[in-house]
Length: 304
Image 1 (cartoon, rainbow, N blue to C red):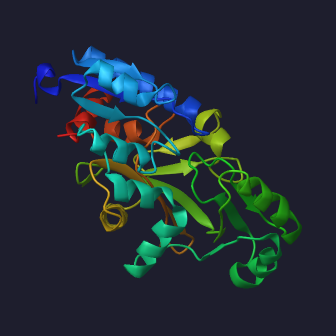
Image 2 (tube, rainbow, N blue to C red; image 1 turned 120 degrees about the vertical axis):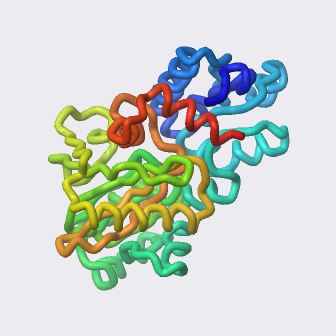
C-alpha cells in the first residue's frame, strides 16, 4: 500500500456536460469522500467550469476520472489530460473512444471471434423497414454513444420502431438496433487485470433501464450470481478477453447476456463504471472482500 502522500494532490473529475451529469456527481462525491477518509489530498473538479483553468491553478499531481458519457468516457478528457502530462485513472484515449462507441466495440469483438448479438446501424427512418427481416422482433434500440441506458427502448412491434429510433436519434444522432437476447443479464467488473465475481441483474422492467439502475427498489442483484463455478470461470475469462481486445486498462465492466441455452453474448464495455449506492462495481468488489474505500484507492493506483 502506498502512503497517502505518494498520491500528491488529486483532482476528482465529476459532473461534466453529458446527459449523465447527475449520476457522475453522485459517483464523484462518493469517490471524493472515500479518498478523504483515506487521508488523500483530494479535491472536487467539475469540467463544466473551465477545466484547463482549474487544473492549472490547482497544481494537481493526478486525476481520478469519475465522468460518464461524452467528454469523460469517450477519450476526449483523456486526451486533454495527456497533453497536460497529468496521470489519470482507467483506460487511455483509444480504448475510451472505442468503448464509448457501441458499434465500433461490437465490430472489434466480432473481428476477434467474440460473440455479440446481431445488429444494424439505422441512419435514416426508411431503413427501419429492414429491421424485422434481418433481426426479428423484439429488438433493443440504443443511441450509439450514451451510457446508463439513456435513450434506449425495447421494441416488440414494428409500429414502435420509428418512435424508438427518433428518441435514440436525439442523443447524438447515431442509432444501433440490436437483436434481443432472451435470457439473463450479467456483468463482470475488472480491476487491474482481475475479473471480480459476476453479478446477475433482475428487474421487473422490460430491461435494465435507467429507472432500474438508479431509482427502482425492485431491482435485484445476485452476487454470487448463481452460475456454476465452471460457467462463472468461463464468463469471467470472456469478459477479460473482451476488455483486452478493446485495449482497456485499469478498471471497467463488461456487460453480457446468457441466453436460454447458456450461450454468452457480449453487450458492451463500461470503461468508467458508476460508483453510486446502486452501482455494480462496488457490489462485485465487496463480494471479493474489497471495501469501498479500499476499492477507490486501488482504482486511483491505476493512475501510476
